[in-house]
Image 1 (cartoon, protein in one colour):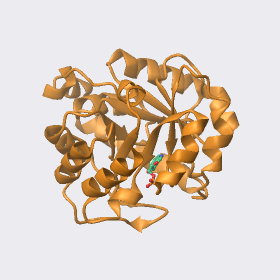
Image 2 (spheres, protein in one colour):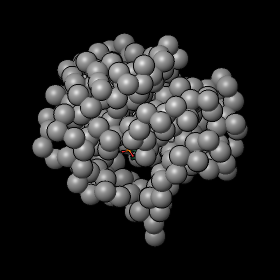
Image 3 (cartoon, rainbow, N blue to C red):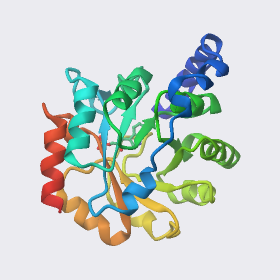
Image 4 (cartoon, rainbow, N blue to C red):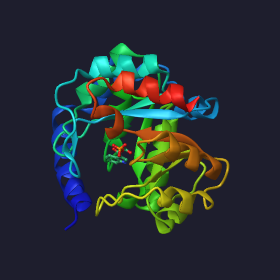
Length: 260
Ligand SMILES: O=P(O)(O)OC[C@@H](O)[C@@H](O)c1c[nH]c2ccccc12
């Protein structure tokens, strides 16, 4: 069994437990549920830098990245750096995150927030909204075409943007549909952890131009971004490169100023 399969098995158990403890009606009556969302896709379209900065404490591929920072400080630092949006990992077991991280980030900033999660059930989309997200991630590798369609339409109905993540041509072909706002190419294979920016370049030509193209993972230099821009990428999701430092906001700020 590969790591992605393991994560999904654990996630189903976790979601069943959450559902039994917090009913949908409670999520729907939370204060943030009626908040008006801010579009990440629009922010990326209007930006010349397009950085989406991530809060990630650890990962199955790197183990500990940073366990000492306060998520509110990280969020404020990223916003001041001028990023287009922030990705907040909410998976606990494999990434050391929590839904409360999303809530705390929301309390600190106005910029678009992405709930970074292994979404396998519409309940998690309601949670995303209730905890202050503006965007959800859907991962093609763990969903059927029918699920991608129904989950993305459900999210759109709640005012959330949808970022659909693919890693190969087959995942991309099954996923293209109008209810998605952004198509992300993950340069990291979630089954083997291998990282190659060539994956973004290879798949870019197959992504129709009506989607905002995002390149995800393994980006650690300005040169990498300069190489990806000619392939039509408008968004760049960066986690470890910022989170491995003592001050992710400052590293994002200096990264963005050298990109301009
Ligand atoms: O830390 P990196 O290599 O800059 O990567 C960030 C982000 O792309 C990565 O965390 C990610 C991309 N897709 C995911 C899906 C689930 C968990 C994590 C991810």
